[in-house]
Every structure is written in C-alpha cells, then in structure tokens.
Length: 446
Image (cartoon, rainbow, N blue to C red):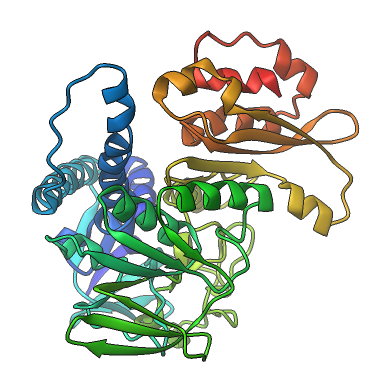
C-alpha cells in the first residue's frame, strides 16, 4: 500500500492549487481525480473557461451594429457553433497541459480513478488502497436536477451539456434566475436564438440588489429575451417538435426546441463514503468545516464547492493556499478576505462587500452613492453606456460595499475591493487620479 503525507481528492482549482503549494514545499502529495481529462475541474472543463470563451464571442457580436455605425464594413455571416466548440476544446487542452506541467514541476503525483474512503486514513481508488496522514477534499460540485425536469441530454440539458451542442436551436427555455442561467441567456440571445428565461424567484439574480436586477432585466427585454419571474415548471412533455413546459400548475405553456436546466449546483461528495471517516455534512449536503477548513475529522480538510463558501474558482484558489499553509505550519489560518462576485452577462455585473439590501436586512444604516455609465466617455466609445456603479458607505464615509453593472464591471470591481478591504473613505477614493478616458474613471463620479 502506498503512503503519502497528503492526499488531495479532486483536481479542480482548489485541489490542484493545494497540490502545487504543498508539492513546492517538498511534501509527498498525491492528487486524485477521475481521469486525466478531468484535471482543471468544473471550472476548466464545464464552467469558467468554456462559458467565458463562448460569451466573448457573444460580446463581440453584440457590438457589430455599433461598429458598423462607426464606419466599419463587417461581413458577419453568423456563428458556426461547431468551430467555436472546437476552439474551446483547444483552449481547455492548452490550459490543462499547463496545469499538468506545473504539477509535474512541483513533483505532485497523480492517480486517476473513482476515489472513496475506507477509513479516516485510507482511500480506495478503483481497487488500489492509498494511506495518508492528511487529506484535502476538493471534489467540487455537480448539477442540481429537478424532479419535474429530468435531464436527458438530448432535449433537456444541464449546463454541463451545452458544450456538446454543435448546432444552435431556434428556441430555448432556460430554467433558473442565477448567474449560470443569465449568462447562457446572454449567449443564446446574441446569436439569434429565441430565449425564454424562467425563474421562480421574484427577480433575476436574487442575491443582487433590486436596482441591479431591474437594470439587467431591462437590457434582456430590450434585446428580445422573454423574462418570466415568479414562475415554476410544473411538468415537462416531449413532443415531435421539441419540449412543452407547463408552468405554475396552470394551463400556461412554453414550447421550445431545447430546455436548459440551470437551477444551481450541489456538493459533489455522495460517492466518497464520508460516513467511514466521521466527516459531517450539513442539511444541504455541504461538508462542515471550522474557519481553518478542518472537518469534524481532525486530519481531513475540505475546500471549494463542497463547503458552504462562495462558489467561485477564485474562492477555491484562496482556500487552497490557506489550507496548504495550515498543513505545512500546523496553524489555524482562516480566510479574512472579501470575495468578489462576477457575472459575465451583457452588461457584466460584479460586486463585493456589503450590498444595500443586506444592510437593510441587517439593520445597518448606510448611505448609497451611485454613478451612471452614461457620463462615461470610454463606455460610449465601447458602444454600451448602460448601467451604473454604486457603493454603500458608513456614516463616516468608509466604503463598505460596491456593485458595478456595465462595461468591464468584472475588472473595475477589484479597485473597489482594495478600497473596501483597506477601509478607504469615499473622499480619499475621489482624490485618486484616474486616466481619461477609461471605463474605471466612473469611480471618480461616485
């Protein structure tokens, strides 16, 4: 039986980052995942990278009419989805090759197969037993499937299945109101697909402030997306032409070629046999952890989407570094930093810190300062001056939170993140000189 100082389950962002940190420090570490092509996890293979590559094409397409009006003669013949699919596969392969090279340079050993615990010090990987001193669970998430919307991978797809499409549908119903649903609505709409977006919550992006949701909804409706909130799918029927969705247990129906179920993801740890380790899970299936990411089993840690922290790759990277440091030093460091939220719709949305709605719910008195993109010259040059930036402020003028919806929001948010973490006041921020014309200059209007 092979023995390792640390075994890491899952080669996604959290898993491979932890392995790199430990391997560089000279720890004998084994990284386990189901297959070599799974290295990179959901982020690389089914999430962050392929979706943003698809959305980059959508963003370019959305600006064609603007640049035509500026005098460019563009001969646009539409999207060849199969070519985009092939280019995305090339991109994923290139990035995965880089990750594998870094792991090799850090002397991280790899083992591929289905892993499960034998006890608190042993795992089984397709019949091979491996013993460890410490373990990090980083097995990520899987698609949440609704009983009334069974995924058949033909007409009813999950977000995992979208990248297998090589022909665009004429119409699609997207079930969900969160970031995944809204991003795919953006993509399909940009290429002329008739999109219906169905969410059971009262607004798109329920975790965002109401004014942000309303701004996105206006853009979506203006671009032809049929937005249906406070709506549920009661029944799904297949027919010769596609799919028929019965809504709200009434006679109202939506007919479409395809359905995308984008109702969120759940922790992927059902097959790990955690009961053999003493590792506890909460009522939602997340692994319970201490602030230092230790589970109820002292030598087992958990990070990323299997724990109830923000479900972003950048969260997993940060947690991996903290766990690696804790393992190396026997310390109990926690994550003391804010996590930015980023959504790559058109327009983009990003936020961090205390939102206006959360302040109201918590009874925290704040002031709100808002600036609109319509006053930003560079946004107009980009061809999209929709949206705004806003911040929440304490009575003393300290910046507590920020949200941006508009051009380059996912980049601009980092400046505001630094301001919040360092308790900078709005007066100090306004004194900082921003280059002109830039999109980030919108911050000086706040």
